[in-house]
Amino acid sequence: MQACFVDQTVDRERDAIIGSDQILTWAQLEEESDIWIRKAREHGAQRDVPLVILGHKQASFIVAITGCLRLGIPFVPIDTIYPSERIQRICDISKSTLLFRADQSRFEKLNEIVTPLAEKQLAYMMFTSGSTGEPKGVQIGVESVVELGSWMRDSFGLGDHPVFMNQAPFSFDLSVYEIVGTLYLGGTCVLNSREVISNTEKFYVRIRDHRATVWVSTPSFAYQQLLSRDFNQKSLPFITTFLFCGEVLSTGLVKHIRQRFPNSNIINTYGPTEATVATTSIFIDDVILNEYDPLPVGYQKPGTKIYCDSHTGELCIVGNNVMRGYINREDLNATKMFSQDGKRGFRTGDSGFVDENGLIFCSGRLDDQIKLHGYRIELSEIDAALRELPGVLTGATIALRKSDGTVVRLISYIVPSAENTKYDDLDLERWKEKLSNVIPNYMIPSEMIVCEALPMSANDKVDRKALTEIYAKHNLDMVIS
Ligand code: AMP
Image 1 (spheres, rainbow, N blue to C red):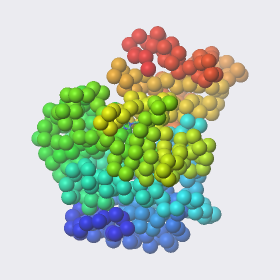
Image 2 (cartoon, protein in one colour):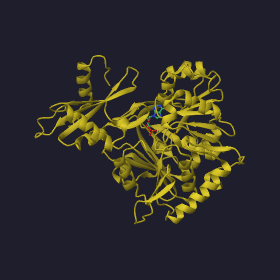
Image 3 (cartoon, rainbow, N blue to C red):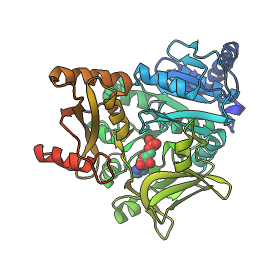
Image 4 (cartoon, rainbow, N blue to C red):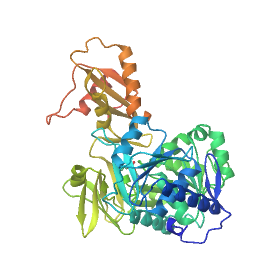
């Protein structure tokens, strides 16, 4: 499995992938990967032509990923969490010619016309929420993935054969930690389906039985676990590391974890999908915990530069881990990307600062991108979906937050079109249903409110702040965003 980044001897009888359906040892993973490659070639798979992998936590999802990496095919991971219209759009935008259904181990042709990508040697293309209503395809090169693997090996203290607890669906770049960590470090990956995760007892037994050592999740996910008394060292005795990314890590959560898992390391990492999972890291020990609130996101990873733009206050990343660009979005690439010292640069949209010791802090967003339960969402993408609803003129979405800044709910305001004067509650239900055909469930607003017009700010944009204040006035228990 050389081309799969495994750079050390792996015991071939050791488990590699504990899927929701089957377990594969390293020897079996290699065999299955060989078979997959043969079949993919028979179906016309070609280097530099993207291939969609659709599924949810099956071992064959990883088999397909290893096959793609070995063949030089950029994989486009899609979890079944997405509605079919969005899956279709991702297939179209990525210009994928083949789709592999991991649950049925079956290939489907998507397109007869094969167009290799302009960008060569990509590892994968991951889609994130896009403000225009179209998801954006982030193109990540093989060089970025190799750097991620070396960083995990050299800086995270995970041991020789870490066993990763995978929670994130493969369409989110957090899961790349477990995939690359397993393949690069010769570890094991325990994949957990939504069904298993929803049953805490089953979930913890699975993690314990497979001796998972590294917990990888968003802070939100770990927070939910605190509800269970069994979330502790006694029930999960092999966990040695909590690897967090994707959201603010609060001192409160760290304190709880230190109480329940006194012997574990807690690592806070930060970075956008556009810079290959993470760009900074820090072990949150007692010194850091006592000194900082909010916590820092860490130090830049080797080979990468991160600094704060003195005009905009925006964190910028320069290095090989930065994406090769959004596919077919030259407009966005022109504003978000730049070149510095011959390296790719990316403006993150996060405000932040770097202190005199090189410690980096992230203080929030400069745009309307939010995180809800760990999911990255551009509010304008929901607005774009609202505008497509029948009988709707326009709409705007706001995020309601707790006092610590955590987003708890999404509320959409809707302005019906002039001819739609007789809307009723049934319309609201129909609109919600229609929305669920185009955007994932986690983006569906929990409340939709009909109004006559939206407040506008001086630059003719919807004034989300005013909308939030209006909402708060009528719902005094909610905190203003
Ligand atoms: P994603 O592309 O889904 O990983 O989301 C990236 C965004 O999540 C970043 O641009 C930040 O706004 C936020 N983020 C990621 N990690 C952290 C962290 N450790 N602390 C605070 N915000 C974070």
